[in-house]
Length: 78
Image (tube, rainbow, N blue to C red; front, side, top):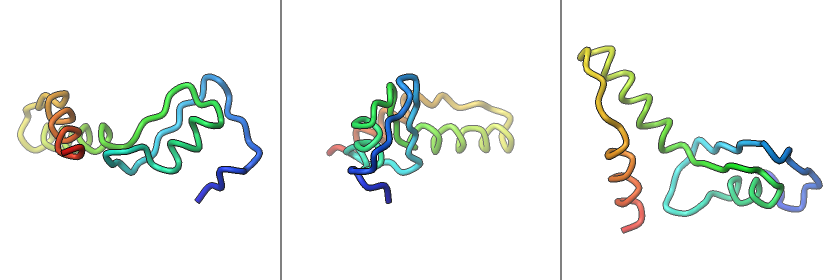
């Protein structure tokens, strides 16, 4: 776990990507924001996109993922 007091400054173009996902920002995401990352994201998009890629391999059909991500994100916050 990264200590919030760690004296490290991220480049202003840095992207911080946490593979975990939840309704709120993870501790890593908060740390990255405080260290200057220009973009911070969790792993929900990667999870859904990997599932869609696997589905494509098995079924030869690329599912639409935007609505799936939106629905899961909504479910996480309710």
